[in-house]
Amino acid sequence: MHSEILKPVVVLIAWSLVMLVWMVATRMPALRKLGIDVSKVRGSKPGGLDGVVPDKTQWPAHNYIHLMEQPTLFYAVALVIALSGTGQGWNAWLAWGYVALRIVHSIWQATVNQISIRFLLFSLSTLCLIALTLHAAMAVFGWHHG
Image (cartoon, rainbow, N blue to C red; front, top):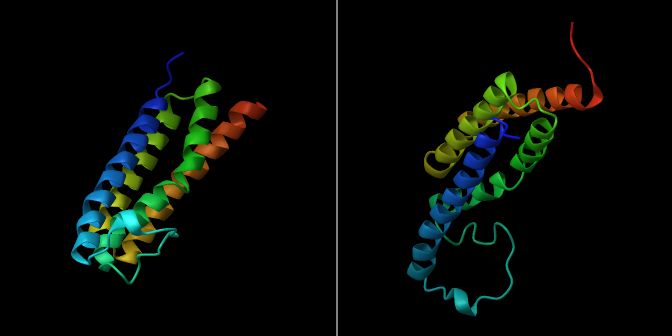
């Protein structure tokens, strides 16, 4: 069974991989410039390079971490919707909205990083996720409007 909602799922996964490449492409030269040999570094934690490399170098890394957080809920709800047979129409549009907003959020965070705009983009994408979650609940619990 093909469900339209699976298309934005694949796009967001692909975008996450783009952000991974962007993170590595900016971070590795910054580490070399600082004389840090990653083959000799042991143990680290997220944000461990904050204050070590330039902030702008860290922005793609911060965004990549964000793409491993809330979007996991999106993937789960999108799969529930796809499996329930309700992945067309409004649900597909909401999923595309979520993905588009997350991509714009990524680009904004990795380049300009003005927090008020980032928060607006995050909030709008979260509204899409809330709507998708309500629609998933309606589908699996048999709640219908009208």
